[in-house]
Length: 319
Length: 320
Image 1 (cartoon, each protein chain N blue to C red):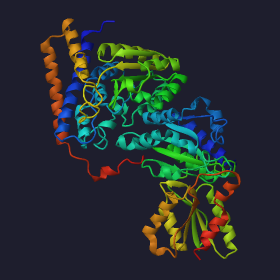
Image 2 (image 1 turned 60 degrees about the horizontal axis):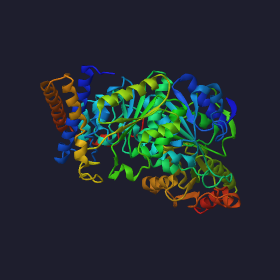
Image 3 (image 1 turned 120 degrees about the vertical axis):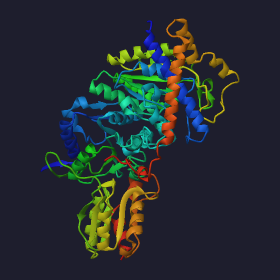
Image 4 (image 1 turned 180 degrees about the vertical axis):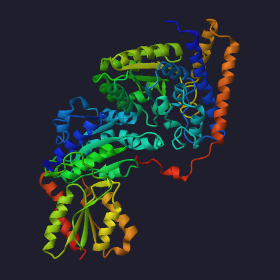
């Protein structure tokens, strides 16, 4: 194990994979000045495999996707999640359909990475995550790690996946440090992780709001409530069984995410659990999400953010 | 450069095969055997035959929504191609995607596209693959004059020119985008002029002259294989049929089809072959009988192929 940041852990995974597979290459804008330098170490080691592209998101996406259709494993860096829709045709109409179109006789292994998340006053075109948008599209997998070790292990699994994976790294996690396994390390896609055990209520979240849930869970101890916190880690495929098992124990479910409320993946989780284990529930499923408005800056953003207090309030309404 | 007789006959055969195949597709569609939204290639045969005949094995082709001619010219099995159009299990893609999305990587057809201009960004990737593998291969992106208006064409050529990717953009300028005439939505006469904005070669060629197309693509491919980067080739041509089967020819002026018929790529080439003494009419008739038989057999194959079963609804949605 080594102490490293979330960003360094991702770069470590990429470098290890690049050493083993000469067909991995990167295309993106400004890997040096761009969003949190999550590829810095790998770039220093393999500069010839990093294509520093013009501001041509459509062509950059096409380059990564087209090359992966021909037999490479590509990393496409879109910088900010908000910028991904600039190349949405390439992702939605092209990459997501490749495996289906080829009828299993070919694939499109491309990891599409972007920084996501709010909380630093960067405004309404640099602060969204949009995981619900990508989760809606058949053919795309969606990965959102919270902790440095998972960031490394999930990046390795994403790079080895044979289809397109949207890999979102949160702006408030990039410099968080943790113990990360050395050498090759994999965390399977589609497996959630219980990051705090509890018996009274299940908090399901992913990416930075997992940290907010952990804070809320600590605060709730004073109210005599012992919350279980699940880090979903991958949105597609998502680990339904892990959540069901927890809810069968606690009887209460609160889903927490930064998404705008309407059409959120949090809603998908709530609907699925209501359909499948309604009788295990002691009360309504609650969602703590962002309001249906763009992300503002400064003091307004403080009001907009998911806070431990908002989560605690939702939990208390169930008791 | 004079082309030898064998090569000329190959080009003729390729064009005729496309024509007979397209005629059969039209017939089967009107008989209710082929479903959906079919975009015929009739009239543009010289472009597909000229471009694809100049390629090498392992070169990459990315086609548009009118790509059946490209598939035939690349040597895709007509049986499988027809079965795909019928939505049958033995189709090139399992009968799930239809005419606009046919692929066959074995024959170099990496993608076809229902999104106008959609092939261009992907072709950057195919060309990047060739360059990265350093295998001397090239990628061809086909788009129409309609597709050339998309921002994708600018971004693709910007990217490809910066990295000197082995990419040839073939603009099949059939002078109409859907039902909108070229002049109504373009401020220039020649789209190949845009090449100057990227510092790359741009050539205009008679898209109804199969030999001329073959020659210019051969030159562009040599340029690309030598590591000198991308080119744009604009083939001026004419779509004899509608935008789709069922379109009576919206957007065309009266008499335009008749004028272009005088420049039909197949009959004009036939006249040239006979005048040069390369072939006799009997030899041409024999070729016609052969390709007609192949196409008839393809339709029978498609009719007899079963429909995909329910498992195919969800198979290979996510990569393993």
